Image 1: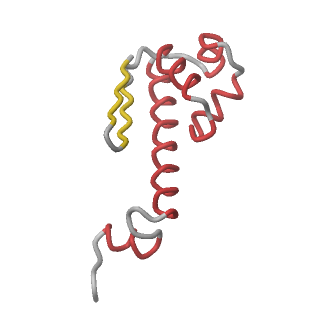
Image 2: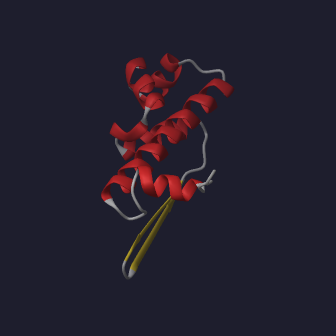
Image 3: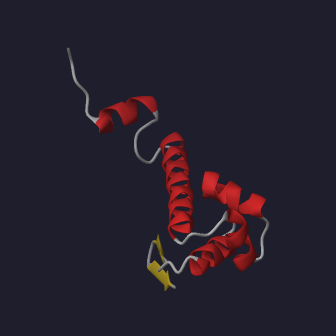
Length: 104
């Protein structure tokens, strides 16, 4: 029986690193993890979705959507969520000949 590494399985099923399908998969995975981290942190802080929504000025339904998957939310809203949760945020963007870092 042949065994495969996780990288080989991902390359075969999703696509190699740098391909559009793989990039989309990686992005969705990251957004899902961000949503789960928000939910866990909110629960640790003993906040309901409604409480968190009130802190940042959005409805409970939007907090629910963010926790399910943060891919369809603005950076501004994410930063307000993280601020309300007292999270340290570091955003780094790298482009050719340019590197931008923003921290909260």
